[in-house]
Image (cartoon, protein in one colour):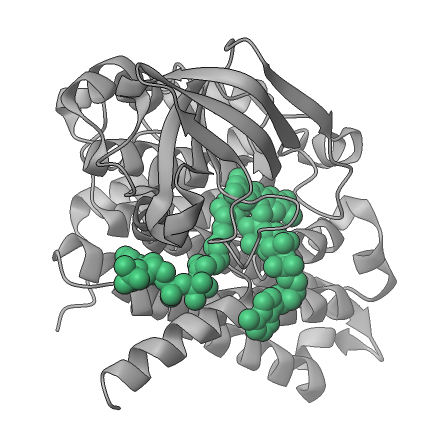
Amino acid sequence: MNFELTEEQLLIRDAARDFAQTELKPGVIERDEKQQFPADQVKKLGELGFLGMMTDPAYNGAGLDTVSYVLVMEELSKIDASTSVVVSVNNSLVCYGLEKFGSEEQKEKYLKPLAAGTQIGAFCLSEPEAGSDATSQKTIAEDKGDYYLLNGTKNWITNGSNAAVYLVIAQTHPNLGHRGINAFIVEKDSPGFTIGPKENKLGIRGSDTHSLQFSDVKVPKENRIGADGFGFKFAMKTLEGGRIGIAAQALGIASGAYELALKYAKERTTFGKPIAEHQAIQFKLADMYTQIEAARLLCLKAAWLKDQHQPYAEAAAVAKLFASDTAMRITVEAVQIHGGYGFVKEYHVERLMRDAKITQIYEGTSEIQRMVIARSILKEGF
Ligand code: CAA
Ligand code: FAD
C-alpha cells in the first residue's frame, strides 16, 4: 500500500491551492452576500483545464485521474464551495456521463466544449416530488418518432441559469417504471424551455440553483443518451462518481475551517496565553484533525478504486456520508473556537458552516447514502 502522491498529483494540488488563494478568496464574502455566480472564476478554471479534468484529451479534457480531482476539489472547497460545486457537477456528472455513455456524435458536439470549459453543463434529475425517491419521475418524454416531446419540471438544478447544456432525466414508458426512464441532452435555447428564479439559499449562495420548466420541448432522437430505458441507470452510475466529488467538497469545507481555527487558536489570547494552550481547545483541534484525516482517506480510497476500474459505488457513499457529517461537525467547532468573531462574516468560518450543510443533502442525502451502504454490505454478506 502506498500513501504517496505522485509529482503530478502534487503539482495539480498546488495549482488548485494557488488558484483558490489568488482567484477565489478575494470577493468570496461579497459573492456569498450578493448571491453572485462566480462567472470570471469559472471561466479561468475552464482555461486551466479544471472543468474537464478527467475527460480524455481527445475530447478536450485534461486526462487526469480521480485522485487528482479529489485533491483539486478539496483545495477549491477550502475557500469557495459555491465555485467548487460548478467544478464537481461539470466534471463528474456532465462530462463523465457524456464520455462514458454518450454516442460519438454527442461527444463531438456536446462534450468537447464542456470539457474545454467554454460551456458548462447541468444534471437534471430532481423534481418537486422526486428527490430521494428518484424513480418517481413525473417529467414525461413522449416518443414522437423523430423526436421526444418533453413536459415537466425539474427542481434545484445547479448551474441552472449558466449552463448551455442540460442532461435531463424523464419518463418515457410509465408502465415500465424505472426501466422506462431516459436521459436526454437539452440545449438551453430549445423553444419551450424556461428557467425559474434563482433560489435564495442558506449556503453555496454563489451557485445558481433554479427550477426548470419544459413545455412541449422537442428533443431530437439522437439526443437520447444510451439505449431506450437506460436513463435511470445512467443517473445512478453517474452519481456514483458525483458523490466522490461532493465528498471531496465536504472534506475541503472541513479542512478549510480547521486551518482557520488552528491559526486563530495560536493567535487569540485569553487568561494570559493563546487559547491553543488550553486543553479544551487542544482536544477540539485533535478531534478535528483526526476526523479530517479519516475523511480524506475515504475520499482518496473511493477515487483510487475508480481509477483502478474497480467497483466504487459503496466507497463513494461511505466517503460522502462521513465527509459531509465531518464538514458539519468541524465547521461548528471552528465557529466555536473563533468565539464571537466566528459569528461574523469577515472570519469566513460562518460561511463554511452554512456551506457544509448542503453536502448532507445533495447528490443523495445522508439517509440515502446509508441506504446505498446498507444494501451493499447486506448483499455482500458482511
Ligand atoms: N448502478 C447501476 N444501477 C443501479 C444503481 C447503480 N449504482 N443503483 C440502482 N441501480 C438500479 C437497480 O439495479 C434497479 O434496476 P433493476 O431493477 O433493473 O435491477 C434500479 O436502478 C432501481 O434501483 P432500486 O430498486 O435500488 O431503486 P430505489 O427506488 O430503491 O432507489 C436510490 C434507489 C439509491 C435510493 C436512488 O433512488 C437514489 O440514489 N436516490 C437519490 C437521488 C440523488 O442522489 N439525487 C441527486 C440529484 S443530482 C444532485 O443532487 C447534484 C447536485 O446537487 C450538485
Ligand atoms: P426528500 O427526498 O423529500 O427527503 C426529505 C427527507 O426525508 C430527507 O432528510 C431524506 O433523507 C429523508 N428520506 C427520504 N426518503 C427516505 C427513506 N427512504 N428513508 C429515510 N429517510 C428518507 N438535483 C439535481 O438533480 N441536480 C442538481 O444539480 C441539484 N442541485 C442541488 C442544489 C441544491 C442547493 C439543492 C438544495 C439541491 C440540489 N439538487 C439537485 C436536489 C437534491 O439532490 C435533492 O434535494 C436531494 O436528493 C433530496 O431530495 P428532496 O429535496 O426531494 O428531499
